[in-house]
Image (cartoon, rainbow, N blue to C red; front, top):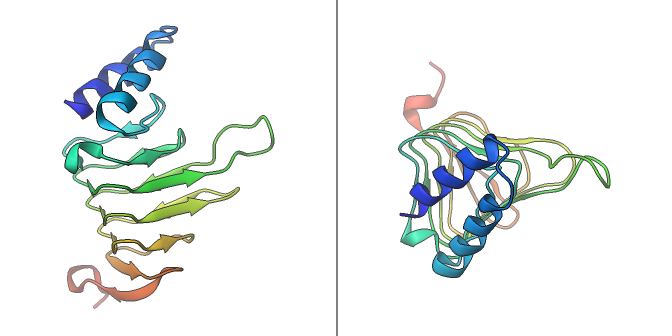
Length: 151
């Protein structure tokens, strides 16, 4: 239901329909306790677990296909200047983000590459490589999954 409502608000936002996307965003917050702006792009097969409870996504977020995002995750960024557009956070395909994780960027884009796993409660402020596992506060490299390792 949550992602269905988001698809509607995103479509209306894309076609520049005034007011309705903001009303849907407010409804999503009231019903699901989730901040999901209409500017956010979400790929097919992506799941927001636990009904998106506590998930906060910045307007500059782009999420790929088949990702799993668990409860109380923040994907937040700054703006390019005081009146500039939001800085993008790009989550590529097949990324898993654990409960309570924080993905933060200030004034340059941040990319979580394909197959990345972010451990629960990790604070990530850097780009990852394909298949990387990161954990900790601040997050550090743990390993690269074998199917993504070179060689």
